Length: 208
Image 1 (cartoon, rainbow, N blue to C red):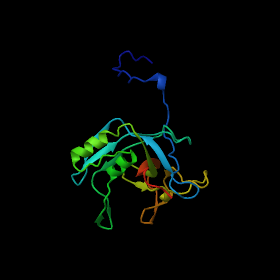
Image 2: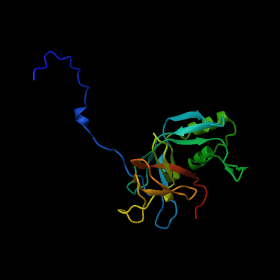
Image 3: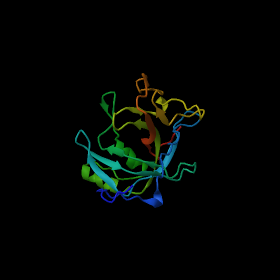
């Protein structure tokens, strides 16, 4: 075919050295052991920590990414994304608790400082950059376009190919439960579970 007279567009450039690498999805680790107890992982905090403001006007910190290290069970190198922690205290049954999400991070990192004001928290958080901390994990799968979300490792369906574990890649028709115990059916074509930090562990407190 003679195309000499056609006004052809030049093709977009392709990186031939990394041609069609395929999916880079990595199944998150199971977050509970055979005894049903939460597994404690260790990870390295980022060297850059973003300063934010939460919906209530308090300082919030973005620890992104956190890299799993020193676990020795095949999960090292996994990246945990978008971990946020605010100075706003926890609430339980309507009562303000003497603890906060970022306070848990500081305790896990072994910080001896006792910040009270925002600037003091900023300084304390700045001091933990790159430190290795301990935490438990949970699973979350979310469709960013529709908002459909499955939260909580226990709420994912059992994996028929991995007895005793949960299914990490959900497809339309799979059944899951909500945190309220309601049974629902996956509507999205596919949902990928990702690991999220559930709770930072204070090494000075004993765990039974």
